[in-house]
Image 1 (cartoon, rainbow, N blue to C red):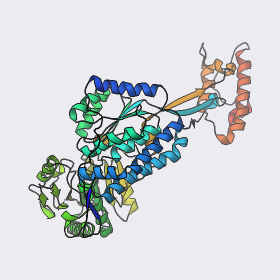
Image 2 (image 1 turned 90 degrees about the horizontal axis):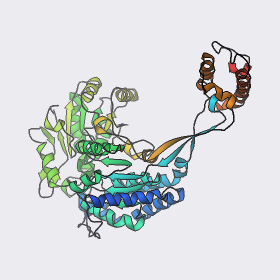
Image 3 (image 1 turned 60 degrees about the vertical axis):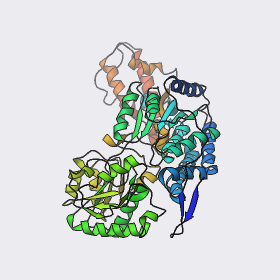
Image 4 (image 1 turned 30 degrees about the horizontal axis):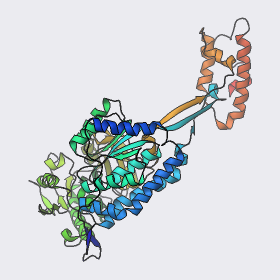
Length: 535
């Protein structure tokens, strides 16, 4: 259900009414949640989710859900974030479809046993790493991209063969309701569930034992999630936030840089965890950056930003007032207009910002961009390193050597040079934080591995006891010397045939020496009578 109107830009502005979704599973507390987790665990233990064919079928069903119920999903996102259908599709639906297609194509390769490198002692054995599912996963989504931040990790968890409980954010309530309605219609209800609710329900859910938890949200809540998980020794992936810096080098195409920064900063009204939080540049660049940013904002949203179908709103009044308070006492070079009734905050730029100001002490998560003057790249690096490690770091320069030097000198969850946010879009790159911005990573194959146990497997023969005498008591220096050769020499495919002959010679020699009076020769290994030992 949504109402649409044409704008002066020719786009459709979606002014959606709240989705009248069928009531999802009732909120649960205590014993009821424990039963739900046990229900999924019992289904997982039957082994039903393990076969590759089943995982592919569930991924195909998820893709069908997104395609067949696209209008319902877009309407829910619009109701939660005042987002146009075009933006909701490109920022959320398209990402999900691409991730599913990648998993469908690559899953047989990801799930296959991976041969492991061997040494001389195991050259005739079979050594491999076998990915296996962990069990029951908990995915706690976020409200700012309510569909993609719940479904994208779900794709990896299904691909890895797990059972999954999704807890969407209660702040994006319309998307949470539609997920609770649709997922049971398309996916196996015994293995995948949606639980809605607020803080109380989430707290009770975290009391249960899971085999992995992925949480997206604030650092403060991330600590609570990690503390709860520790009681069960449950591993966690925490996708948190932080103040992602953006350095603009004087040797830079300012038009391109400011256009890309404006896109990443004001997309979703600044409510993006990897949006550039603040700009660092030399004082001489500050006015030029402001002017170029103003031009980019006008290019994107027109003269009347408030009526642009591409400019969203702050999600609720609490966040609106928090962001509005960050403007107090600041020098506003551009923007600054607010409207509490519609939760509108204009794209805003602050100049000559004091590093100790409130706006620099917390993640902004809104459409305010402070500019902090620094003397040069070295001072920018020092400024960044004096603060918590951010989720992302951005550098704009024509000098790739400088970009790589700044990457080497700093630490962040991810980096994009000469653009913003785009490292998130490349599924071959792991997405995650470091330090206070999070731990662990997902996307593409990295999601599969996050939700898998990489199980080491070694299959040995019952033969070869002659060589095994080296590891059986009683110990001797000569046995240690021979063992050094076996353990420290790795097998190269190019020399496999030659090394096979060497091993055969060693086995015969060891067998002969062990069973003759006096045992193995004493002293260092050195060059022995088997010529292949010198390889």
